Amino acid sequence: MKGLLQFSTWMYRKLLFVYPEDLRREFGSEIVLAFAADLEESGLLRVWRCALRELVTVALPGQAGNPFFLSPALAFLGTALTESALVLVGIHQLPHLSGAEIVSMWLAALSVSSLDACVALVVTCFYSRCSINVLRLD
Amino acid sequence: MEQLAPAAFLILFALASGDKHGYAIMQEARKLSDSGVQIGPATLYTTIQRLLESDRIREVPGPEGGDTRRRYYRLTSAGKAALNSEIARMEALVKKSKGLRLRPAEGS
Image (cartoon, rainbow over all chains, first blue to last red; front, side, top):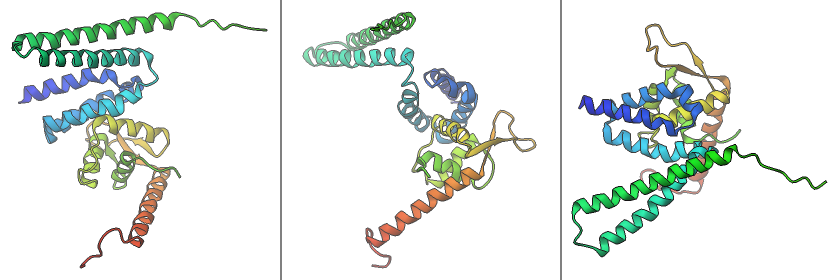
Protein backbone atom coordinates (compact mmCIF):
# COMPACT_ATOMS: atom_id res chain seq x y z
CA MET A 1 0.00 0.00 0.00
CA LYS A 2 2.84 2.38 0.85
CA GLY A 3 4.31 1.77 -2.60
CA LEU A 4 0.99 2.69 -4.21
CA LEU A 5 0.81 5.93 -2.23
CA GLN A 6 4.38 6.80 -3.24
CA PHE A 7 3.58 6.04 -6.89
CA SER A 8 0.44 8.20 -6.64
CA THR A 9 2.45 11.09 -5.24
CA TRP A 10 5.04 10.68 -8.01
CA MET A 11 2.26 10.68 -10.63
CA TYR A 12 0.71 13.81 -9.12
CA ARG A 13 4.09 15.57 -9.08
CA LYS A 14 4.42 14.84 -12.81
CA LEU A 15 0.86 16.01 -13.41
CA LEU A 16 1.68 19.40 -11.89
CA PHE A 17 3.22 20.51 -15.21
CA VAL A 18 -0.27 21.28 -16.49
CA TYR A 19 -0.74 23.94 -13.78
CA PRO A 20 0.32 27.56 -14.37
CA GLU A 21 4.07 28.04 -14.02
CA ASP A 22 3.91 30.75 -11.34
CA LEU A 23 1.79 28.50 -9.10
CA ARG A 24 4.18 25.57 -9.61
CA ARG A 25 7.26 27.69 -8.95
CA GLU A 26 5.86 29.30 -5.81
CA PHE A 27 3.87 26.45 -4.26
CA GLY A 28 4.74 23.26 -6.19
CA SER A 29 6.51 21.44 -3.37
CA GLU A 30 3.81 22.38 -0.84
CA ILE A 31 1.04 21.26 -3.20
CA VAL A 32 2.71 17.84 -3.45
CA LEU A 33 3.19 17.73 0.35
CA ALA A 34 -0.51 18.48 0.90
CA PHE A 35 -1.48 15.86 -1.69
CA ALA A 36 0.69 13.19 -0.01
CA ALA A 37 -0.68 14.03 3.45
CA ASP A 38 -4.24 13.96 2.14
CA LEU A 39 -3.63 10.58 0.48
CA GLU A 40 -2.80 9.05 3.84
CA GLU A 41 -5.76 10.67 5.54
CA SER A 42 -8.56 10.54 2.96
CA GLY A 43 -7.63 7.57 0.78
CA LEU A 44 -6.59 7.05 -2.80
CA LEU A 45 -9.96 7.24 -4.52
CA ARG A 46 -11.24 10.41 -2.90
CA VAL A 47 -7.99 12.31 -3.34
CA TRP A 48 -7.59 11.35 -7.00
CA ARG A 49 -11.21 12.22 -7.75
CA CYS A 50 -10.55 15.66 -6.30
CA ALA A 51 -7.22 15.97 -8.17
CA LEU A 52 -8.85 15.13 -11.51
CA ARG A 53 -11.65 17.60 -10.86
CA GLU A 54 -9.02 20.27 -10.13
CA LEU A 55 -7.37 19.58 -13.48
CA VAL A 56 -10.53 20.87 -15.13
CA THR A 57 -11.46 23.59 -12.64
CA VAL A 58 -8.00 24.97 -11.79
CA ALA A 59 -5.36 23.85 -14.29
CA LEU A 60 -7.21 24.42 -17.57
CA PRO A 61 -8.59 27.90 -16.74
CA GLY A 62 -5.12 28.80 -15.41
CA GLN A 63 -3.60 27.94 -18.78
CA ALA A 64 -6.30 29.70 -20.82
CA GLY A 65 -3.87 32.39 -21.99
CA ASN A 66 -1.04 29.98 -22.78
CA PRO A 67 -1.24 28.94 -26.47
CA PHE A 68 1.56 26.39 -26.04
CA PHE A 69 -0.70 24.45 -23.68
CA LEU A 70 -4.11 25.33 -25.00
CA SER A 71 -3.70 24.47 -28.69
CA PRO A 72 -2.24 20.95 -28.11
CA ALA A 73 -4.84 20.31 -25.40
CA LEU A 74 -7.73 21.34 -27.67
CA ALA A 75 -6.27 19.35 -30.59
CA PHE A 76 -5.92 16.28 -28.37
CA LEU A 77 -9.42 16.65 -26.97
CA GLY A 78 -11.05 17.23 -30.35
CA THR A 79 -9.34 14.28 -32.00
CA ALA A 80 -9.87 12.02 -28.98
CA LEU A 81 -13.61 12.75 -29.03
CA THR A 82 -13.91 12.09 -32.79
CA GLU A 83 -11.76 8.95 -32.63
CA SER A 84 -13.65 7.65 -29.58
CA ALA A 85 -16.93 8.05 -31.45
CA LEU A 86 -15.48 6.10 -34.39
CA VAL A 87 -14.18 3.34 -32.12
CA LEU A 88 -17.56 3.06 -30.39
CA VAL A 89 -19.34 2.83 -33.77
CA GLY A 90 -16.81 0.19 -34.84
CA ILE A 91 -17.41 -1.87 -31.70
CA HIS A 92 -21.16 -1.58 -32.22
CA GLN A 93 -20.99 -2.56 -35.91
CA LEU A 94 -18.54 -5.42 -35.41
CA PRO A 95 -19.68 -7.37 -32.34
CA HIS A 96 -17.32 -10.28 -33.07
CA LEU A 97 -14.20 -8.20 -32.31
CA SER A 98 -11.84 -9.75 -29.76
CA GLY A 99 -10.66 -7.94 -26.63
CA ALA A 100 -7.17 -7.49 -28.08
CA GLU A 101 -8.61 -5.89 -31.22
CA ILE A 102 -10.71 -3.47 -29.19
CA VAL A 103 -7.68 -2.51 -27.08
CA SER A 104 -5.63 -1.92 -30.23
CA MET A 105 -8.41 0.29 -31.62
CA TRP A 106 -8.34 2.43 -28.48
CA LEU A 107 -4.53 2.58 -28.58
CA ALA A 108 -4.69 3.70 -32.20
CA ALA A 109 -7.21 6.42 -31.26
CA LEU A 110 -4.91 7.55 -28.44
CA SER A 111 -1.89 7.60 -30.77
CA VAL A 112 -3.69 9.68 -33.40
CA SER A 113 -4.88 12.13 -30.70
CA SER A 114 -1.34 12.44 -29.30
CA LEU A 115 0.07 12.96 -32.79
CA ASP A 116 -2.48 15.71 -33.40
CA ALA A 117 -1.47 17.39 -30.14
CA CYS A 118 2.21 17.25 -31.21
CA VAL A 119 1.39 18.76 -34.61
CA ALA A 120 -0.63 21.53 -32.91
CA LEU A 121 2.33 22.26 -30.61
CA VAL A 122 4.78 22.43 -33.52
CA VAL A 123 2.44 24.72 -35.51
CA THR A 124 1.96 26.98 -32.45
CA CYS A 125 5.74 27.17 -31.92
CA PHE A 126 6.26 27.97 -35.61
CA TYR A 127 3.66 30.74 -35.70
CA SER A 128 4.82 32.23 -32.40
CA ARG A 129 8.17 32.96 -34.14
CA CYS A 130 6.49 34.72 -37.07
CA SER A 131 6.23 38.47 -36.68
CA ILE A 132 2.91 40.05 -37.45
CA ASN A 133 3.13 42.55 -40.30
CA VAL A 134 0.86 45.50 -39.87
CA LEU A 135 -0.14 47.34 -43.01
CA ARG A 136 0.26 51.06 -42.64
CA LEU A 137 -2.16 52.96 -44.83
CA ASP A 138 -0.83 56.44 -44.25
CA MET B 1 -16.66 44.86 -0.76
CA GLU B 2 -16.56 42.09 -3.37
CA GLN B 3 -18.10 38.74 -2.55
CA LEU B 4 -15.65 36.00 -1.55
CA ALA B 5 -15.49 32.68 -3.38
CA PRO B 6 -16.40 29.71 -1.13
CA ALA B 7 -12.78 28.49 -1.00
CA ALA B 8 -11.45 31.95 -0.09
CA PHE B 9 -14.12 32.35 2.59
CA LEU B 10 -13.26 28.98 4.15
CA ILE B 11 -9.52 29.69 4.10
CA LEU B 12 -10.01 33.06 5.82
CA PHE B 13 -12.39 31.40 8.30
CA ALA B 14 -9.84 28.65 9.00
CA LEU B 15 -7.15 31.26 9.67
CA ALA B 16 -9.39 33.21 12.04
CA SER B 17 -8.53 30.71 14.79
CA GLY B 18 -4.75 31.20 14.36
CA ASP B 19 -1.77 30.80 12.04
CA LYS B 20 -1.74 27.62 10.00
CA HIS B 21 0.16 25.95 7.17
CA GLY B 22 -1.56 24.95 3.94
CA TYR B 23 -2.53 21.41 4.81
CA ALA B 24 -3.84 22.45 8.26
CA ILE B 25 -5.97 25.09 6.51
CA MET B 26 -7.31 22.39 4.18
CA GLN B 27 -8.26 20.14 7.12
CA GLU B 28 -9.88 23.01 9.04
CA ALA B 29 -11.82 24.15 5.95
CA ARG B 30 -13.12 20.61 5.51
CA LYS B 31 -14.28 20.53 9.14
CA LEU B 32 -15.91 23.96 8.87
CA SER B 33 -17.87 23.04 5.76
CA ASP B 34 -18.76 19.62 7.16
CA SER B 35 -16.93 18.16 4.11
CA GLY B 36 -19.45 20.00 1.92
CA VAL B 37 -16.82 22.00 0.04
CA GLN B 38 -13.95 19.93 -1.34
CA ILE B 39 -10.79 21.96 -1.30
CA GLY B 40 -7.97 20.05 -2.96
CA PRO B 41 -4.28 21.07 -2.89
CA ALA B 42 -4.41 23.00 -6.19
CA THR B 43 -7.55 24.94 -5.24
CA LEU B 44 -6.03 25.64 -1.83
CA TYR B 45 -2.77 27.10 -3.10
CA THR B 46 -4.36 28.95 -6.03
CA THR B 47 -6.64 30.66 -3.52
CA ILE B 48 -3.78 31.26 -1.05
CA GLN B 49 -1.83 32.90 -3.92
CA ARG B 50 -4.76 35.24 -4.67
CA LEU B 51 -5.28 36.06 -0.98
CA LEU B 52 -1.57 36.87 -0.59
CA GLU B 53 -1.72 39.13 -3.65
CA SER B 54 -4.76 40.96 -2.27
CA ASP B 55 -3.05 41.30 1.17
CA ARG B 56 -5.83 39.41 2.94
CA ILE B 57 -3.34 36.96 4.38
CA ARG B 58 0.42 37.09 4.86
CA GLU B 59 3.20 34.63 5.35
CA VAL B 60 4.61 34.35 8.89
CA PRO B 61 7.45 32.32 10.41
CA GLY B 62 6.40 28.88 11.61
CA PRO B 63 6.41 27.86 15.28
CA GLU B 64 9.56 26.54 16.96
CA GLY B 65 10.11 22.95 15.91
CA GLY B 66 7.43 23.18 13.23
CA ASP B 67 7.68 21.57 9.79
CA THR B 68 10.22 23.68 7.91
CA ARG B 69 8.99 22.42 4.53
CA ARG B 70 5.68 24.22 5.07
CA ARG B 71 4.92 27.92 5.14
CA TYR B 72 2.53 29.40 7.67
CA TYR B 73 -0.11 32.02 6.96
CA ARG B 74 -1.88 34.66 9.05
CA LEU B 75 -5.05 36.66 8.55
CA THR B 76 -4.40 40.40 8.00
CA SER B 77 -6.74 43.23 8.99
CA ALA B 78 -7.94 43.40 5.36
CA GLY B 79 -8.64 39.65 5.53
CA LYS B 80 -10.60 40.06 8.78
CA ALA B 81 -12.63 42.86 7.21
CA ALA B 82 -13.40 40.71 4.15
CA LEU B 83 -14.39 37.78 6.37
CA ASN B 84 -16.64 39.94 8.56
CA SER B 85 -18.24 41.52 5.51
CA GLU B 86 -18.99 38.08 4.05
CA ILE B 87 -20.45 36.83 7.34
CA ALA B 88 -22.64 39.95 7.53
CA ARG B 89 -23.82 39.31 3.95
CA MET B 90 -24.70 35.72 4.83
CA GLU B 91 -26.53 36.80 7.99
CA ALA B 92 -28.57 39.29 5.97
CA LEU B 93 -29.48 36.53 3.52
CA VAL B 94 -30.53 34.17 6.32
CA LYS B 95 -32.63 36.98 7.83
CA LYS B 96 -34.35 37.55 4.49
CA SER B 97 -34.97 33.82 4.01
CA LYS B 98 -36.62 33.68 7.45
CA GLY B 99 -38.89 36.54 6.41
CA LEU B 100 -39.94 34.56 3.35
CA ARG B 101 -40.69 31.49 5.51
CA LEU B 102 -38.80 29.24 3.08
CA ARG B 103 -38.46 26.51 5.66
CA PRO B 104 -40.91 25.23 8.29
CA ALA B 105 -40.57 26.84 11.70
CA GLU B 106 -39.07 24.69 14.45
CA GLY B 107 -41.63 22.53 16.26
CA SER B 108 -44.25 22.70 13.49
